[in-house]
Image (cartoon, rainbow, N blue to C red; front, side):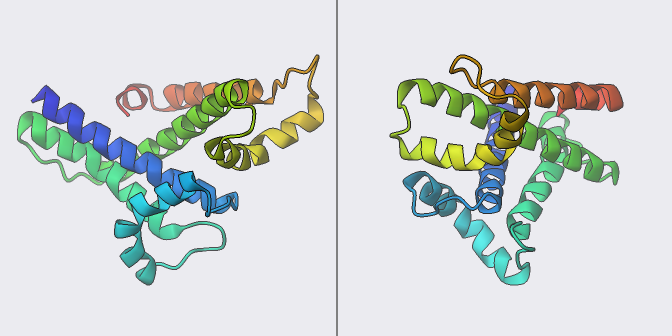
Length: 184
């Protein structure tokens, strides 16, 4: 049962991350002709495409992808409970758990995108198409910090400040929802 639980949880969380990546790329107006962006679109299009006919985008926010990510986050824990114990819980509290899980997944995605961008800046030095998309996605968050905290000695501390803000928000989530936040 633990293997099946791990597999279901991992597949759902990875697909939610890709959906959030698609939303974030559309919001930050990334180059969708980039190979990495094309991969994200091709992975999500079979599910999001029909849903977009019903739910149009609200400005730069892809509501179909957001709704699908919320539904997956909401269904994840009742499904895992069903696998582990054989009981199905249809509680309205699952909507709150789904929302919190979606927020935590978004924070985790931002964290990993910034970490990967930082590591790739040391290795590829701006020549990778993936790094270009990651730069387009993270620059709206990091540019305002650079206005207040310029690079010191050629080292850009804006990524570290964004990560510290994410850690602070994670600890805030632990304080507000102590037992629940750890399980997300």
